[in-house]
Length: 477
Ligand code: C2E
Ligand code: CA
Ligand code: CA
Image 1 (cartoon, rainbow, N blue to C red):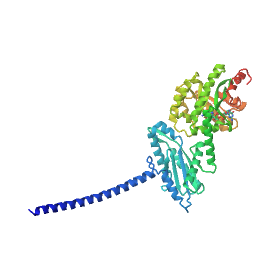
Image 2 (image 1 turned 135 degrees about the horizontal axis):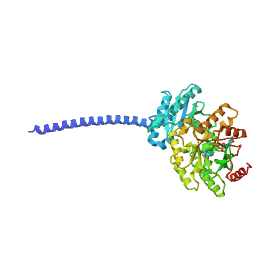
Image 3 (image 1 turned 120 degrees about the vertical axis):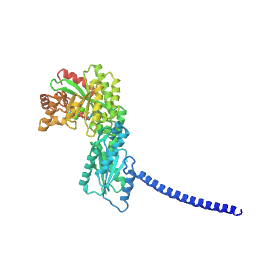
Image 4 (image 1 turned 60 degrees about the vertical axis):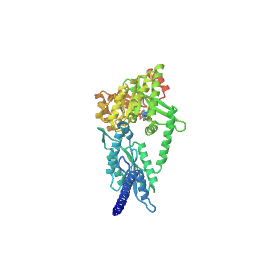
Protein backbone atom coordinates (compact mmCIF):
# COMPACT_ATOMS: atom_id res chain seq x y z
CA UNK A 1 0.00 0.00 0.00
CA UNK A 2 3.04 2.15 0.65
CA UNK A 3 4.35 1.82 -2.83
CA UNK A 4 1.14 3.10 -4.22
CA UNK A 5 1.77 6.76 -3.61
CA UNK A 6 5.39 6.38 -4.74
CA UNK A 7 4.23 4.70 -7.96
CA UNK A 8 1.76 7.43 -8.39
CA UNK A 9 4.53 9.92 -7.73
CA UNK A 10 6.81 8.35 -10.36
CA UNK A 11 3.92 8.42 -12.82
CA UNK A 12 3.54 12.04 -12.15
CA UNK A 13 7.26 12.60 -12.66
CA UNK A 14 7.21 10.65 -15.93
CA UNK A 15 4.22 12.45 -17.25
CA UNK A 16 5.73 15.74 -16.18
CA UNK A 17 8.92 14.80 -17.97
CA UNK A 18 6.94 13.73 -21.00
CA UNK A 19 4.97 16.93 -20.96
CA UNK A 20 8.20 18.92 -20.67
CA UNK A 21 9.73 17.04 -23.61
CA UNK A 22 6.58 17.44 -25.61
CA UNK A 23 6.26 21.11 -24.91
CA UNK A 24 9.97 21.64 -25.63
CA UNK A 25 9.46 19.85 -28.94
CA UNK A 26 6.38 21.90 -29.48
CA UNK A 27 8.25 25.11 -28.71
CA UNK A 28 11.10 24.06 -31.00
CA UNK A 29 8.65 23.18 -33.77
CA UNK A 30 6.88 26.48 -33.21
CA UNK A 31 10.14 28.39 -33.37
CA UNK A 32 11.17 26.55 -36.56
CA UNK A 33 7.75 27.16 -38.10
CA UNK A 34 7.84 30.82 -37.14
CA UNK A 35 11.33 31.17 -38.56
CA UNK A 36 10.34 29.51 -41.83
CA UNK A 37 7.22 31.58 -41.97
CA UNK A 38 9.13 34.79 -41.34
CA UNK A 39 11.57 33.81 -44.05
CA UNK A 40 8.72 33.11 -46.42
CA UNK A 41 7.04 36.35 -45.49
CA UNK A 42 10.35 38.16 -45.83
CA UNK A 43 10.70 36.81 -49.30
CA UNK A 44 7.15 37.86 -50.09
CA UNK A 45 7.82 41.28 -48.67
CA UNK A 46 10.99 41.65 -50.73
CA UNK A 47 9.02 40.63 -53.80
CA UNK A 48 6.31 43.14 -53.01
CA UNK A 49 8.81 45.87 -52.23
CA UNK A 50 10.63 45.40 -55.54
CA UNK A 51 7.82 44.43 -57.86
CA UNK A 52 4.69 45.82 -59.42
CA UNK A 53 1.82 43.52 -58.46
CA UNK A 54 -0.11 44.12 -61.69
CA UNK A 55 2.52 43.12 -64.24
CA UNK A 56 4.90 41.20 -62.00
CA UNK A 57 7.70 43.41 -63.37
CA UNK A 58 10.23 45.14 -61.14
CA UNK A 59 9.10 48.57 -59.91
CA UNK A 60 10.61 52.03 -59.53
CA UNK A 61 12.28 51.19 -56.19
CA UNK A 62 14.01 48.20 -57.78
CA UNK A 63 15.29 50.24 -60.73
CA UNK A 64 16.64 52.95 -58.42
CA UNK A 65 18.31 50.33 -56.26
CA UNK A 66 19.91 48.56 -59.22
CA UNK A 67 21.02 51.75 -60.93
CA UNK A 68 22.49 53.11 -57.69
CA UNK A 69 24.40 49.85 -57.41
CA UNK A 70 25.73 50.16 -60.96
CA UNK A 71 26.87 53.71 -60.26
CA UNK A 72 28.73 52.73 -57.08
CA UNK A 73 31.83 54.89 -56.38
CA UNK A 74 34.58 54.15 -58.87
CA UNK A 75 32.17 52.63 -61.44
CA UNK A 76 31.52 54.28 -64.79
CA UNK A 77 29.09 51.91 -66.41
CA UNK A 78 27.99 52.33 -69.99
CA UNK A 79 24.25 51.77 -69.99
CA UNK A 80 21.08 53.17 -71.50
CA UNK A 81 17.77 54.06 -69.91
CA UNK A 82 14.55 54.04 -71.95
CA UNK A 83 11.65 55.97 -70.46
CA UNK A 84 8.43 54.74 -72.04
CA UNK A 85 4.98 56.27 -71.81
CA UNK A 86 1.92 55.00 -73.67
CA UNK A 87 0.12 57.43 -75.96
CA UNK A 88 -3.59 57.66 -75.36
CA UNK A 89 -3.73 54.94 -72.72
CA UNK A 90 -6.19 56.96 -70.67
CA UNK A 91 -8.82 56.48 -73.34
CA UNK A 92 -8.56 52.70 -72.95
CA UNK A 93 -9.12 53.02 -69.21
CA UNK A 94 -12.00 55.44 -69.75
CA UNK A 95 -13.74 53.31 -72.32
CA UNK A 96 -12.91 49.77 -71.24
CA UNK A 97 -12.67 50.26 -67.48
CA UNK A 98 -9.76 49.43 -65.23
CA UNK A 99 -10.03 45.74 -65.98
CA UNK A 100 -9.47 46.44 -69.66
CA UNK A 101 -6.66 48.84 -68.81
CA UNK A 102 -4.98 46.24 -66.58
CA UNK A 103 -5.12 43.60 -69.29
CA UNK A 104 -3.55 46.05 -71.66
CA UNK A 105 -0.73 47.02 -69.28
CA UNK A 106 0.16 43.37 -68.71
CA UNK A 107 0.37 42.84 -72.45
CA UNK A 108 2.64 45.88 -72.78
CA UNK A 109 4.86 44.48 -70.03
CA UNK A 110 5.17 41.21 -71.94
CA UNK A 111 5.96 42.99 -75.22
CA UNK A 112 8.67 45.03 -73.52
CA UNK A 113 10.18 41.93 -71.98
CA UNK A 114 10.31 40.37 -75.46
CA UNK A 115 12.05 43.40 -76.91
CA UNK A 116 15.23 43.16 -74.83
CA UNK A 117 17.70 40.63 -73.47
CA UNK A 118 17.29 38.64 -70.27
CA UNK A 119 19.94 40.65 -68.43
CA UNK A 120 18.27 44.01 -69.16
CA UNK A 121 15.74 45.39 -66.69
CA UNK A 122 12.14 45.98 -67.71
CA UNK A 123 10.17 47.79 -65.01
CA UNK A 124 6.80 49.45 -64.57
CA UNK A 125 7.18 52.83 -62.96
CA UNK A 126 3.49 53.35 -62.32
CA UNK A 127 0.44 54.23 -64.40
CA UNK A 128 1.33 53.75 -68.04
CA UNK A 129 5.03 54.46 -67.52
CA UNK A 130 7.68 51.82 -68.05
CA UNK A 131 11.45 51.95 -67.82
CA UNK A 132 13.96 49.71 -69.54
CA UNK A 133 17.60 49.64 -68.44
CA UNK A 134 19.96 48.21 -71.02
CA UNK A 135 23.11 47.02 -69.33
CA UNK A 136 25.79 47.63 -71.93
CA UNK A 137 24.85 48.53 -75.47
CA UNK A 138 26.98 48.79 -78.55
CA UNK A 139 26.55 52.26 -80.00
CA UNK A 140 23.61 54.49 -80.87
CA UNK A 141 22.76 52.55 -84.02
CA UNK A 142 22.18 49.48 -81.92
CA UNK A 143 20.12 51.50 -79.42
CA UNK A 144 17.96 52.91 -82.21
CA UNK A 145 17.34 49.39 -83.45
CA UNK A 146 16.18 48.32 -79.99
CA UNK A 147 13.91 51.37 -79.75
CA UNK A 148 12.33 50.55 -83.10
CA UNK A 149 11.73 47.02 -81.90
CA UNK A 150 10.04 48.32 -78.74
CA UNK A 151 7.91 50.69 -80.86
CA UNK A 152 6.88 47.85 -83.11
CA UNK A 153 6.10 45.24 -80.44
CA UNK A 154 4.32 47.60 -78.05
CA UNK A 155 2.21 49.10 -80.85
CA UNK A 156 0.72 45.75 -81.79
CA UNK A 157 -3.01 45.45 -81.09
CA UNK A 158 -4.15 43.65 -77.97
CA UNK A 159 -7.46 41.84 -77.57
CA UNK A 160 -9.45 43.54 -74.79
CA UNK A 161 -13.08 42.61 -74.16
CA UNK A 162 -13.59 41.30 -77.69
CA UNK A 163 -12.03 44.35 -79.30
CA UNK A 164 -8.57 44.85 -80.72
CA UNK A 165 -6.98 47.88 -79.11
CA UNK A 166 -3.62 49.47 -79.73
CA UNK A 167 -1.68 52.43 -78.46
CA UNK A 168 1.80 53.52 -79.36
CA UNK A 169 4.66 54.20 -76.97
CA UNK A 170 6.66 57.43 -76.75
CA UNK A 171 10.25 56.62 -75.81
CA UNK A 172 12.93 58.89 -74.36
CA UNK A 173 16.51 57.63 -74.18
CA UNK A 174 19.38 58.75 -71.96
CA UNK A 175 22.77 57.02 -71.94
CA UNK A 176 25.47 56.88 -69.30
CA UNK A 177 28.00 58.30 -68.94
CA UNK A 178 27.15 60.99 -71.51
CA UNK A 179 23.77 62.07 -70.13
CA UNK A 180 24.37 61.49 -66.42
CA UNK A 181 26.45 59.75 -63.79
CA UNK A 182 23.65 58.83 -61.43
CA UNK A 183 20.26 57.18 -61.47
CA UNK A 184 18.27 60.37 -60.80
CA UNK A 185 19.86 62.42 -63.57
CA UNK A 186 19.64 59.67 -66.16
CA UNK A 187 15.97 59.00 -65.47
CA UNK A 188 15.15 62.71 -65.44
CA UNK A 189 16.86 63.18 -68.79
CA UNK A 190 15.25 60.11 -70.36
CA UNK A 191 11.91 61.47 -69.11
CA UNK A 192 12.61 64.88 -70.72
CA UNK A 193 13.44 63.16 -74.01
CA UNK A 194 10.20 61.16 -73.78
CA UNK A 195 8.29 64.38 -73.15
CA UNK A 196 9.82 65.93 -76.21
CA UNK A 197 8.53 62.99 -78.28
CA UNK A 198 5.04 63.54 -76.85
CA UNK A 199 5.15 67.18 -77.86
CA UNK A 200 5.92 66.48 -81.46
CA UNK A 201 3.56 63.80 -82.55
CA UNK A 202 4.26 60.84 -80.21
CA UNK A 203 4.79 57.23 -81.34
CA UNK A 204 8.52 57.66 -81.70
CA UNK A 205 11.78 57.65 -79.76
CA UNK A 206 14.33 60.37 -79.12
CA UNK A 207 17.72 60.68 -77.47
CA UNK A 208 18.21 63.25 -74.75
CA UNK A 209 20.00 66.44 -75.79
CA UNK A 210 20.87 69.42 -73.65
CA UNK A 211 18.19 72.10 -73.48
CA UNK A 212 15.24 69.71 -73.39
CA UNK A 213 14.42 70.65 -69.80
CA UNK A 214 14.29 74.35 -70.65
CA UNK A 215 11.93 73.61 -73.53
CA UNK A 216 9.72 71.53 -71.26
CA UNK A 217 9.63 74.35 -68.71
CA UNK A 218 8.65 76.83 -71.41
CA UNK A 219 5.83 74.61 -72.57
CA UNK A 220 4.61 74.19 -69.03
CA UNK A 221 4.53 77.99 -68.68
CA UNK A 222 2.62 78.18 -71.95
CA UNK A 223 0.04 75.69 -70.68
CA UNK A 224 -0.42 77.77 -67.51
CA UNK A 225 -0.94 80.93 -69.56
CA UNK A 226 -3.39 79.12 -71.81
CA UNK A 227 -5.38 77.90 -68.82
CA UNK A 228 -5.62 81.48 -67.62
CA UNK A 229 -6.60 82.73 -71.07
CA UNK A 230 -9.42 80.18 -71.17
CA UNK A 231 -10.60 81.16 -67.70
CA UNK A 232 -10.59 84.84 -68.65
CA UNK A 233 -12.25 84.14 -71.98
CA UNK A 234 -9.29 85.61 -73.87
CA UNK A 235 -9.45 83.13 -76.75
CA UNK A 236 -10.97 84.75 -79.83
CA UNK A 237 -12.20 83.22 -83.05
CA UNK A 238 -11.31 84.32 -86.60
CA UNK A 239 -13.45 83.30 -89.59
CA UNK A 240 -12.27 82.31 -93.06
CA UNK A 241 -14.79 82.16 -95.92
CA UNK A 242 -15.30 79.00 -97.96
CA UNK A 243 -16.35 79.86 -101.48
CA UNK A 244 -18.04 77.94 -104.23
CA UNK A 245 -15.43 77.53 -106.95
CA UNK A 246 -18.01 77.95 -109.71
CA UNK A 247 -20.27 80.75 -108.49
CA UNK A 248 -17.84 82.46 -106.12
CA UNK A 249 -20.53 82.57 -103.45
CA UNK A 250 -19.69 82.07 -99.80
CA UNK A 251 -20.87 78.67 -98.65
CA UNK A 252 -19.85 78.96 -95.03
CA UNK A 253 -17.00 79.95 -92.73
CA UNK A 254 -14.28 78.09 -90.87
CA UNK A 255 -13.70 79.12 -87.26
CA UNK A 256 -10.01 79.37 -86.29
CA UNK A 257 -8.99 79.96 -82.68
CA UNK A 258 -6.84 83.02 -81.97
CA UNK A 259 -4.85 83.84 -78.85
CA UNK A 260 -3.23 87.19 -78.30
CA UNK A 261 -1.18 87.15 -75.10
CA UNK A 262 -0.11 90.34 -73.31
CA UNK A 263 3.60 89.59 -73.45
CA UNK A 264 3.83 86.69 -75.88
CA UNK A 265 1.88 88.47 -78.59
CA UNK A 266 -0.03 86.32 -81.10
CA UNK A 267 0.45 82.67 -80.27
CA UNK A 268 -0.51 80.59 -83.33
CA UNK A 269 -2.90 77.64 -82.95
CA UNK A 270 -0.20 75.34 -84.36
CA UNK A 271 1.59 76.07 -81.07
CA UNK A 272 -1.21 76.27 -78.52
CA UNK A 273 -3.54 73.54 -79.83
CA UNK A 274 -0.91 70.81 -79.23
CA UNK A 275 -0.21 72.34 -75.81
CA UNK A 276 -3.94 72.19 -75.09
CA UNK A 277 -4.10 68.56 -76.22
CA UNK A 278 -1.27 67.52 -73.95
CA UNK A 279 -2.43 69.43 -70.91
CA UNK A 280 -6.04 68.33 -71.14
CA UNK A 281 -7.14 71.91 -71.89
CA UNK A 282 -8.34 70.87 -75.34
CA UNK A 283 -11.85 70.16 -74.00
CA UNK A 284 -12.14 73.64 -72.50
CA UNK A 285 -10.76 75.12 -75.72
CA UNK A 286 -13.25 73.18 -77.85
CA UNK A 287 -16.18 74.25 -75.69
CA UNK A 288 -15.02 77.88 -75.66
CA UNK A 289 -14.80 77.97 -79.46
CA UNK A 290 -18.21 76.30 -79.82
CA UNK A 291 -19.83 78.79 -77.39
CA UNK A 292 -18.28 81.74 -79.21
CA UNK A 293 -19.35 80.47 -82.61
CA UNK A 294 -22.93 79.85 -81.47
CA UNK A 295 -23.15 83.34 -79.94
CA UNK A 296 -21.68 84.82 -83.12
CA UNK A 297 -24.12 82.98 -85.40
CA UNK A 298 -27.02 84.17 -83.23
CA UNK A 299 -25.70 87.75 -83.41
CA UNK A 300 -25.27 87.55 -87.20
CA UNK A 301 -28.83 86.23 -87.50
CA UNK A 302 -30.10 89.28 -85.61
CA UNK A 303 -27.94 91.67 -87.66
CA UNK A 304 -29.04 90.01 -90.89
CA UNK A 305 -25.54 88.84 -91.86
CA UNK A 306 -26.20 85.76 -94.03
CA UNK A 307 -23.88 83.02 -92.73
CA UNK A 308 -25.30 79.57 -93.35
CA UNK A 309 -22.80 77.48 -91.37
CA UNK A 310 -19.55 77.61 -89.43
CA UNK A 311 -17.03 74.79 -89.45
CA UNK A 312 -15.18 74.16 -86.17
CA UNK A 313 -11.96 72.18 -85.89
CA UNK A 314 -11.95 69.16 -83.62
CA UNK A 315 -9.00 66.95 -82.89
CA UNK A 316 -9.74 63.25 -82.52
CA UNK A 317 -8.29 63.76 -79.07
CA UNK A 318 -11.50 65.53 -78.11
CA UNK A 319 -13.63 62.90 -79.73
CA UNK A 320 -12.50 60.11 -77.43
CA UNK A 321 -13.58 61.82 -74.23
CA UNK A 322 -16.61 59.98 -72.83
CA UNK A 323 -19.69 62.22 -72.67
CA UNK A 324 -18.08 64.52 -75.25
CA UNK A 325 -21.09 64.43 -77.56
CA UNK A 326 -23.52 65.01 -74.68
CA UNK A 327 -21.62 68.05 -73.44
CA UNK A 328 -21.60 69.58 -76.93
CA UNK A 329 -25.30 68.86 -77.35
CA UNK A 330 -25.97 70.52 -73.98
CA UNK A 331 -24.15 73.67 -75.10
CA UNK A 332 -26.04 73.82 -78.39
CA UNK A 333 -29.35 73.22 -76.62
CA UNK A 334 -28.86 76.54 -74.79
CA UNK A 335 -28.50 78.39 -78.08
CA UNK A 336 -31.17 79.38 -80.62
CA UNK A 337 -28.87 78.13 -83.40
CA UNK A 338 -29.69 74.81 -85.08
CA UNK A 339 -26.91 72.19 -84.77
CA UNK A 340 -27.03 71.60 -88.53
CA UNK A 341 -25.31 74.98 -88.91
CA UNK A 342 -22.24 73.63 -87.13
CA UNK A 343 -19.84 71.43 -89.08
CA UNK A 344 -16.98 69.73 -87.35
CA UNK A 345 -13.68 69.42 -89.20
CA UNK A 346 -11.98 66.29 -87.96
CA UNK A 347 -8.27 65.96 -88.34
CA UNK A 348 -6.95 62.49 -87.96
CA UNK A 349 -3.96 61.94 -85.75
CA UNK A 350 -1.53 59.10 -85.84
CA UNK A 351 -1.67 58.46 -82.12
CA UNK A 352 -5.41 57.93 -82.20
CA UNK A 353 -5.59 54.25 -82.80
CA UNK A 354 -9.13 53.41 -81.84
CA UNK A 355 -10.97 53.71 -85.09
CA UNK A 356 -14.09 51.88 -83.87
CA UNK A 357 -14.55 54.26 -80.96
CA UNK A 358 -13.93 57.33 -83.12
CA UNK A 359 -16.44 56.18 -85.70
CA UNK A 360 -19.01 55.52 -82.97
CA UNK A 361 -18.54 59.05 -81.67
CA UNK A 362 -18.79 60.47 -85.18
CA UNK A 363 -22.16 58.77 -85.62
CA UNK A 364 -23.27 60.16 -82.26
CA UNK A 365 -22.31 63.66 -83.41
CA UNK A 366 -24.18 63.15 -86.64
CA UNK A 367 -27.23 61.91 -84.68
CA UNK A 368 -27.19 65.18 -82.73
CA UNK A 369 -27.63 67.01 -86.02
CA UNK A 370 -24.05 68.22 -86.54
CA UNK A 371 -22.44 67.87 -89.96
CA UNK A 372 -18.97 66.33 -90.24
CA UNK A 373 -16.07 66.92 -92.57
CA UNK A 374 -12.73 65.19 -92.92
CA UNK A 375 -9.90 67.73 -92.71
CA UNK A 376 -6.44 67.53 -94.29
CA UNK A 377 -7.49 64.58 -96.39
CA UNK A 378 -4.66 62.74 -98.10
CA UNK A 379 -1.99 63.88 -95.67
CA UNK A 380 -2.49 61.28 -93.00
CA UNK A 381 -4.02 57.97 -92.22
CA UNK A 382 -7.66 58.13 -93.23
CA UNK A 383 -8.04 55.16 -95.34
CA UNK A 384 -9.93 55.53 -98.57
CA UNK A 385 -11.83 52.30 -98.05
CA UNK A 386 -12.94 53.58 -94.66
CA UNK A 387 -14.49 56.70 -96.14
CA UNK A 388 -17.69 54.95 -97.16
CA UNK A 389 -18.46 54.00 -93.55
CA UNK A 390 -17.87 57.43 -92.07
CA UNK A 391 -20.85 59.70 -91.46
CA UNK A 392 -19.26 62.61 -93.31
CA UNK A 393 -20.59 64.77 -96.11
CA UNK A 394 -17.40 66.59 -97.12
CA UNK A 395 -13.70 65.99 -97.45
CA UNK A 396 -11.14 68.73 -97.39
CA UNK A 397 -8.08 68.21 -99.57
CA UNK A 398 -4.89 68.95 -97.68
CA UNK A 399 -3.05 72.20 -98.44
CA UNK A 400 0.11 70.37 -99.44
CA UNK A 401 -1.58 68.89 -102.56
CA UNK A 402 -3.14 72.21 -103.51
CA UNK A 403 0.24 73.88 -103.19
CA UNK A 404 2.08 71.22 -105.18
CA UNK A 405 -0.69 70.46 -107.68
CA UNK A 406 0.44 72.78 -110.45
CA UNK A 407 4.13 71.84 -110.42
CA UNK A 408 4.29 68.33 -109.13
CA UNK A 409 2.86 65.28 -110.91
CA UNK A 410 2.27 63.22 -107.81
CA UNK A 411 0.40 66.00 -106.01
CA UNK A 412 -1.73 66.66 -109.07
CA UNK A 413 -2.64 63.02 -109.51
CA UNK A 414 -3.50 62.58 -105.85
CA UNK A 415 -5.73 65.67 -105.93
CA UNK A 416 -7.48 64.41 -109.06
CA UNK A 417 -7.98 60.97 -107.54
CA UNK A 418 -9.43 62.44 -104.35
CA UNK A 419 -11.92 64.60 -106.28
CA UNK A 420 -12.95 61.64 -108.48
CA UNK A 421 -13.40 59.38 -105.49
CA UNK A 422 -15.39 61.99 -103.59
CA UNK A 423 -17.74 62.43 -106.54
CA UNK A 424 -18.29 58.70 -106.73
CA UNK A 425 -19.16 58.66 -103.06
CA UNK A 426 -21.29 61.79 -103.52
CA UNK A 427 -19.15 63.76 -101.09
CA UNK A 428 -18.53 67.48 -101.37
CA UNK A 429 -14.87 68.48 -101.81
CA UNK A 430 -13.17 71.53 -100.33
CA UNK A 431 -9.66 72.60 -101.29
CA UNK A 432 -7.78 74.50 -98.60
CA UNK A 433 -4.78 76.78 -98.94
CA UNK A 434 -5.82 78.19 -102.33
CA UNK A 435 -3.43 81.10 -102.84
CA UNK A 436 -3.59 81.92 -106.56
CA UNK A 437 -6.12 82.30 -109.36
CA UNK A 438 -4.36 79.49 -111.26
CA UNK A 439 -4.91 77.12 -108.39
CA UNK A 440 -8.57 78.14 -108.05
CA UNK A 441 -9.16 77.60 -111.79
CA UNK A 442 -7.38 74.27 -111.88
CA UNK A 443 -9.40 73.01 -108.91
CA UNK A 444 -12.69 74.25 -110.37
CA UNK A 445 -11.94 72.51 -113.68
CA UNK A 446 -11.17 69.30 -111.84
CA UNK A 447 -14.65 69.40 -110.35
CA UNK A 448 -13.71 70.43 -106.83
CA UNK A 449 -16.69 72.19 -105.22
CA UNK A 450 -15.38 74.67 -102.67
CA UNK A 451 -12.18 76.68 -102.23
CA UNK A 452 -10.70 78.27 -99.18
CA UNK A 453 -7.46 80.23 -98.92
CA UNK A 454 -5.63 83.54 -98.99
CA UNK A 455 -6.58 83.99 -102.67
CA UNK A 456 -10.18 84.46 -101.56
CA UNK A 457 -9.73 85.83 -98.06
CA UNK A 458 -7.54 85.58 -94.99
CA UNK A 459 -9.18 84.56 -91.71
CA UNK A 460 -10.86 87.71 -90.34
CA UNK A 461 -12.31 88.94 -87.05
CA UNK A 462 -16.07 88.45 -86.73
CA UNK A 463 -16.74 92.19 -87.03
CA UNK A 464 -15.28 92.13 -90.57
CA UNK A 465 -17.49 89.31 -91.88
CA UNK A 466 -20.62 91.40 -92.54
CA UNK A 467 -18.66 93.95 -94.59
CA UNK A 468 -16.89 91.22 -96.56
CA UNK A 469 -20.17 89.55 -97.49
CA UNK A 470 -21.66 92.91 -98.53
CA UNK A 471 -18.67 93.77 -100.73
CA UNK A 472 -18.87 90.33 -102.31
CA UNK A 473 -22.60 90.71 -102.99
CA UNK A 474 -21.96 94.04 -104.69
CA UNK A 475 -19.19 92.50 -106.78
CA UNK A 476 -16.31 94.28 -105.02
CA UNK A 477 -14.53 91.35 -103.33
P1 C2E B 1 -6.43 73.78 -90.39
O1 C2E B 1 -7.71 73.31 -89.83
O2 C2E B 1 -5.85 72.98 -91.51
O3 C2E B 1 -6.66 75.27 -90.79
C1 C2E B 1 -6.12 75.88 -91.93
C2 C2E B 1 -4.93 76.71 -91.60
O4 C2E B 1 -4.38 77.23 -92.79
C3 C2E B 1 -5.25 77.93 -90.75
O5 C2E B 1 -4.11 78.19 -89.95
C4 C2E B 1 -5.44 79.00 -91.79
O6 C2E B 1 -5.23 80.31 -91.28
C5 C2E B 1 -4.37 78.64 -92.77
N1 C2E B 1 -4.67 79.09 -94.12
C6 C2E B 1 -5.85 79.42 -94.67
N2 C2E B 1 -5.70 79.75 -95.97
C7 C2E B 1 -4.39 79.62 -96.26
C8 C2E B 1 -3.61 79.81 -97.45
O7 C2E B 1 -4.08 80.17 -98.50
N3 C2E B 1 -2.27 79.57 -97.34
C9 C2E B 1 -1.70 79.16 -96.19
N4 C2E B 1 -0.39 78.94 -96.18
N5 C2E B 1 -2.41 78.94 -95.05
C10 C2E B 1 -3.74 79.18 -95.09
P2 C2E B 1 -4.25 78.52 -88.41
O8 C2E B 1 -5.40 79.41 -88.16
O9 C2E B 1 -2.91 78.94 -87.96
O10 C2E B 1 -4.61 77.11 -87.79
C11 C2E B 1 -3.71 76.07 -87.80
C12 C2E B 1 -4.32 74.78 -87.33
O11 C2E B 1 -4.67 74.86 -85.95
C13 C2E B 1 -5.61 74.45 -88.03
O12 C2E B 1 -5.30 73.85 -89.25
C14 C2E B 1 -6.27 73.54 -87.04
O13 C2E B 1 -5.78 72.22 -87.19
C15 C2E B 1 -5.79 74.07 -85.72
N6 C2E B 1 -6.86 74.87 -85.11
C16 C2E B 1 -7.18 76.18 -85.30
N7 C2E B 1 -8.23 76.52 -84.54
C17 C2E B 1 -8.58 75.42 -83.86
C18 C2E B 1 -9.61 75.10 -82.89
O14 C2E B 1 -10.46 75.94 -82.53
N8 C2E B 1 -9.66 73.84 -82.39
C19 C2E B 1 -8.77 72.88 -82.78
N9 C2E B 1 -8.88 71.65 -82.25
N10 C2E B 1 -7.82 73.12 -83.68
C20 C2E B 1 -7.71 74.37 -84.21
CA1 CA C 1 -9.65 72.86 -90.57
CA1 CA D 1 -5.36 71.80 -93.06
